[in-house]
Length: 156
Image (cartoon, rainbow, N blue to C red; front, side, top):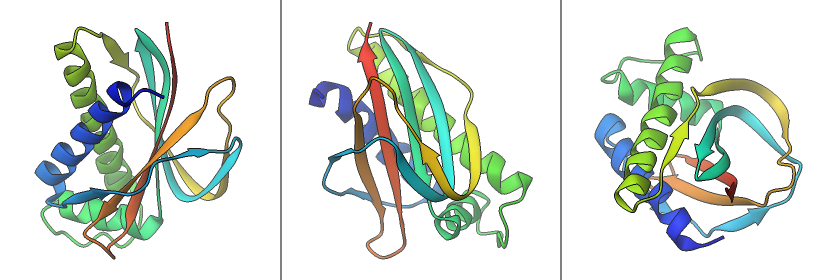
C-alpha cells in the first residue's frame, strides 16, 4: 500500500489524539494483518467511500479505551465502558477520519466516511475480504497502551 495513502491516517491520528486527549503518539512498525484477525476489548469501525473504498478500524484494550475516554472528559474517572465512554471513543474515531478526509482533500483526493460503529467484547473476529489490511500501531506514551489502526481499502 502506497505511503501517500497511509501518511494522512498517521498525521490525523497524531494531531487529533494530542488535541482531544493530550496523548503523544509514536508509530510502531507497520505490518500486514492476516485475515481474519481477532481483537479483544474495543473495535471501532469507520467506512470509507469515494476515491478510495474500504474501512478503518481502531482496536484497543478496554483499559486503553477507558484511559482515552477519561482524558477526553477532562480526567473524569471512567470505570466502565458505559454509553458516555463509547460515545467519546466513537467521536474520537470520527474526528480522526474526518481529519484524514481533509488531508486527502488538500491533495485532490476526495473521500467520505460513515458514522463509527463501536464493538465491545472478547475475541472479536474481523475479516477484510478482497483487501489487504495494513496495521499502524499507534503507541501512547510508551507503556500507557496502544491503538491498532487497521486500514483496508482499494482505489475506485
